[in-house]
Length: 146
Image (cartoon, rainbow, N blue to C red):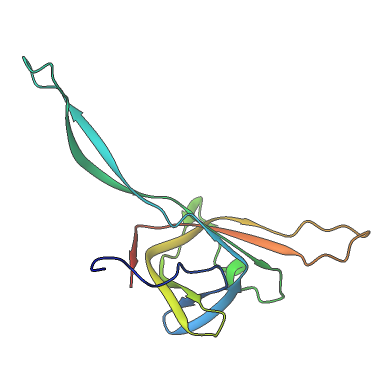
């Protein structure tokens, strides 16, 4: 049948984040790949049948990444810094890459103007041998499929 996508849906697998051409981290979870268009409602005088709905601004949800905690300080060092009473952020363009179980690139998203707005270190318990998880939340100015 024409028009039907015969490819199976993608599965969660392995995620990487690449800044420039350098792979900086493997991740276990990625959430917030969301683009939303605000809708402006305009009421037309004398028209009671409907309200005009016009496209407004594009909003991007923060992206949340989780991974096993390592001694690599790359994301911890990227956090915003306070200098002279002002917050300094370093915006970076990055790619989020999803791989198939066979190791091939399945999907790639390009994120522009990203910077960390929240970093959460691991929860530690002496009674547990679980893998420690760190979380990085990124604000950004654009998201597109590549």
